[in-house]
Amino acid sequence: MLENKNPSKTNISELGEFGLIDHLTKQFKISQKTTIKGIGDDAAVLVSEAKKQIVVTTDLLVEGVHFDLSYVPLKHLGYKAVVVNLSDVYAMNATAAQITVSIAVSNRFPIEALEELYAGIATASKVYNVDVVGGDTTSSTTGLIISITAIGYAKPEDIVYRNGAKENDLLVVTGDLGAAYLGLQVLEREKEVFKVNPNSQPDLEPYTYLIERQLKPEARKDITKLLTDLEVRPTAMIDISDGLSSEILHICTQSGVGCNLYEDKIPLDPQVISACEEFNLDSTTIALSGGEDYELLFTIGTEDFPKIKANPHLTIIGHISHKKEGTHLITRANTKIPLIARGWNSLQKEE
Ligand code: ADP
Ligand code: MG
Image (cartoon, rainbow, N blue to C red; front, side):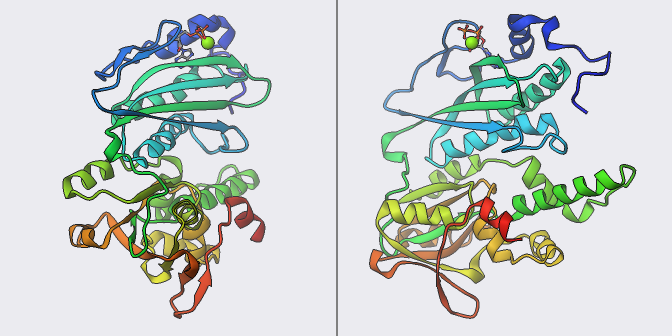
């Protein structure tokens, strides 16, 4: 589909490296007051607001490892590549302001494909209000590689690390879990169906939320503001990119504490519950280990409980205990089982 066999598609070599960079990046305008110089010189120049610290994070996405272009539209890929980075900035309780975008592409990609990718990047940078201030462009002999770096700012006293959770703190999660993993299962299934029968018209209506969570995830920019408005400062925070259990364990290990997580409190969308029945998967396992949900997990002192208890975006799913009590899941049947971090890969193998 992406092979450049169509004569109406323009080969990258027609523009040359500088022409290509200019073509893709001329749409980016500077809107942040912390950006002094964006694209166009040897390096971007930024300035931090007074008394703020600078937060920097990078992600690398490799075709065939992190995404499959047979069902991921390039526009969505560009959008998602930005969002997953911004999620890490928000997980520090910081405000994101700039990104850089580096790509390695093979000549099987026509310019039109890169335009799609950059349209997604541009949309995300508008939605999240960040400037694209630089990047690098090179060729690849295999697939597409995208690396994005995000830069954010926060007052030192506002930055939330993974290591601040204290005994008796409440464990809180935003949104709901498991949908992105199930969206991937639906897309993989449709890909197989399509291989057998290219004329089949899948009915994806029952899975709209799942597919959206997989293809067009959003980062929780709203939570930084919500916490400020509620005057709640989490004691620890992390974004849920690899599944709830591994992220809870990161907080517990780094904070030197234990935890009890309650199975019946884990927030699940109705589409997650019905898709789990259909795919014969356990919804708790999916929420714990599915990954790619880009929600935030944080801990708060019990004195902050009244401020968050009625909030529809936030669910209390457990509490922090003393380190010697270990890290456990309390099941619906009220049994206590050790929490284990299982990556996405081990989940695949088990099926
Ligand atoms: P250099 O040779 O110094 O690396 P380039 O010619 O690669 O410079 O880049 C020129 C400008 O375009 C720089 O500001 C760089 O940050 C920016 N740039 C290059 N590639 C990209 C890209 N893929 N996306 C966004 N900006 C880019
Ligand atoms: Mg360069």
